[in-house]
Image 1 (cartoon, rainbow, N blue to C red):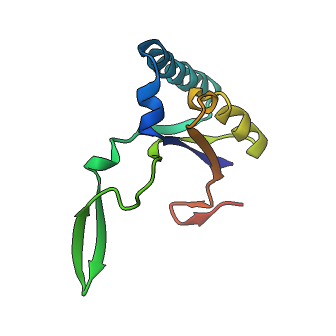
Image 2 (cartoon, helix red, strand yellow):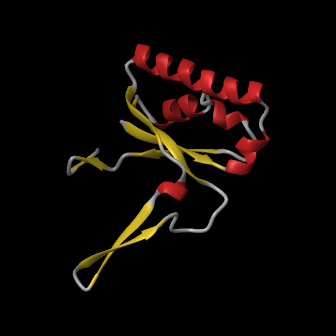
Length: 123
C-alpha cells in the first residue's frame, strides 16, 4: 500500500527553534530517510520552497491566469512529503511518528493512503 506522509510547516514555529533544534530536525530527517531506504519503503521524498515563491494557475475563458501565491491565507503550508510503500496504515502511522516534525508542537504530519497512481485505482 502506498501512503503520502505530508509535513505541514508553520514558519513562526520553525523561527522560534534554536539553531541546535533546527540542526536536530534536519539530522532527524536524514536518519529517517536512510532508515526508509534500508527498509525499502521509500518511494520518494521532496521538500518544497516557501509558498511566497509559488504561483496559482487557473483557467478563465480558456486562458491561463497566473497569480502570485500562496492561494490561501493560513499559518501553515505544505513543506514537503514522503511517498512510501508499506504493509498497512498502521505501519504508515508508525513511520510518520518517527518524523522529527511530529514531536514539535505547532507542526503537523499527515498520513493519507494513495487512491490511485498512474491512473490505476489502488485496492
